[in-house]
Length: 375
Image (tube, rainbow, N blue to C red; front, side):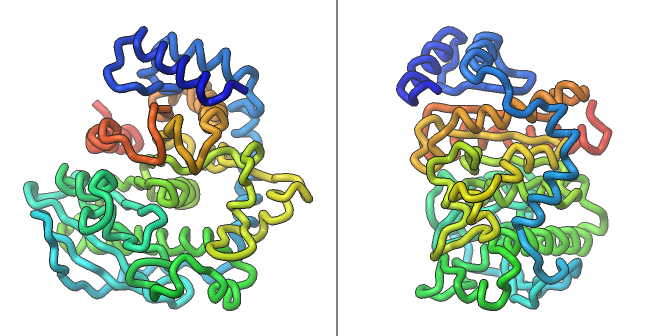
């Protein structure tokens, strides 16, 4: 496997050769350059899992993923909520909603409605990274301005719903943020990842009900967009909630099988994602699924995967390309090559503005393709 420095040199050469002004490599998808594709093919070698293999074993790996997520209470399908307007330093109106989740937990989310059109282009579920300010960051109310992708999409005409993870923001006290010990005392057979999935599924129901009440119609599109923690939450939400038409995951994973820090998915303390993976991530049991198996659950709906070459958290960008390449093969073989794309870019654990700026039209097109009305 090439070292990151070699990757960067090759990537730079590709970018110069094809005249890309901002260094990035399109690995898969209809827009990738032949030179980048050739380099990807030579670098990655033979696929560990073919697209056909992924599709053939999709039900088997679905069961394995669900087993790792654990057993929790049934997901709430209720769209009931209470709302309050919040002090908003931006020009776009945002409301905070409260609702009840699967485990009778009080959930919160921010909802931003577009102001310049009679009905939104669709709904976007905007999922935040690991941060103490939670849902406020993607909506541009706090945190990093370059991670305010929810506010960007709201300004582009979407109704945006940003749920808050149960261990942060207004849902957790300062001494309890990003700690899951109490959760596992209550639900030893569940997982924090499963809980976040259930909460986000409930948020989709709430978003749909809010849309119906405000606009008197069904939403024409529902997409999930996330960064880091929000990215793997977006992928799992799309994998197990068929109401999601399209998903964008930025800086969200690397393959567990080759991850030198695989224990991150099953830590002994702090924020423990999935305890059921403890043996596999420590080499004491076989790994029954990996992230490409999550991605294939989303097939044939549209996906965009984005990963930085210098990401200090998910450091094995080649494994992201390997997973993406396997999934892209399935899309291509089944006649849906235009519905999957993945990108490597020369940067760290960030969400490049060039990709954020493309989101409104990309989501719009992806939803039209999914719902059969693409022009």
